[in-house]
Length: 207
Image 1 (cartoon, helix red, strand yellow):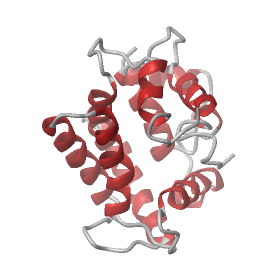
Image 2 (cartoon, helix red, strand yellow):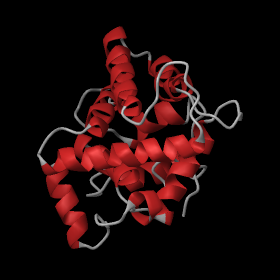
Image 3 (tube, helix red, strand yellow):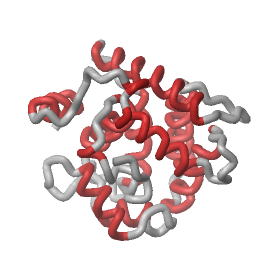
């Protein structure tokens, strides 16, 4: 299932509202608020690029024993994504700045999708996929997801299962690159909430 095919499939099922004004949509704003709170690691009311990289690169690379190349690629991809939302090294971002920056990012991502260009979220999810697909068979299994999230304390086993089920669209027991990219695209760039409620774990409540 390709990224484009998956989006078309979900639209056919009326699962995705592509027309919403994200900056004023309560569903999207709730997602952004929940993400901000989860990643504000020192609870100071600000979010920094360093906190995001610690959460999404350092911890995960250490847990999987990732190579320097894979770690570098993930660092670059995550930095690219959040730089497009206004993040810079050492800069503290407020929740309002985060929402404004992510709204701009979502618009740019949707413009890129309309042009058939690869999205920043795809670069991020591709790099993450390379980190988690430990046996390099082209799919992420439940065991591989557990090896990362459960073992490093990000998710408990039940939440890891929920996350897996959220991403395994065709229910074949594997998460593909396209499936993972699609679910993350829906989180960041659309108002969709119900079909991705457990994408970042039960501890990220926005529904």
